[in-house]
Image (cartoon, rainbow, N blue to C red; front, side, top):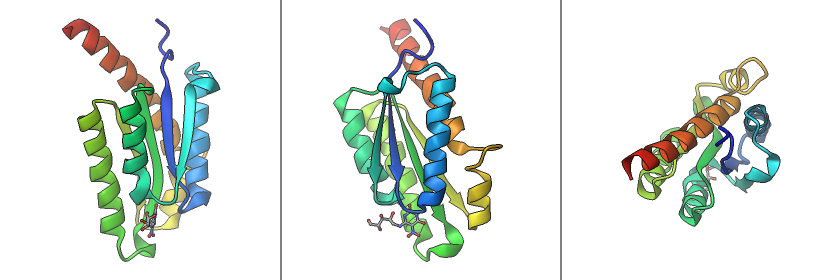
Length: 150
Ligand code: INI
């Protein structure tokens, strides 16, 4: 079976859109580079990173996706409730993955300032592009493990 014969869901937060749209571009480009056709990718948008886990949970429960990529950006210097938003996103995403037994990739940038976020969402380094490779690797790993352990 080809490595990229998987279906991938992407949940992307609109908050800090200048950054998250770059992460989305990186993720889509990364999936294409692995040979995944666009029809096997579904993108869902949510208002902010705090809402990512709920949308990811709905996608994971549908059993239509082999892995889900979560994209967001929380900038510490610009939000007093950084810990609540970033922590809620991180713990929620982890819970969805374990409860639904679907790989859910955490690609929510949590940075001190906008400069760091820009650095991690650019052409040279792009956390979305990395997340694409991680999603494909985990989707294939889970498939293989389940076959071997069945
Ligand atoms: N959401 C983010 O994704 N990043 C942020 O930096 C951020 N700040 O700064 O507050 C943020 N807030 C919105 C939050 O995710 C929810 O959408 C909102 O609280 C409604 O539940």
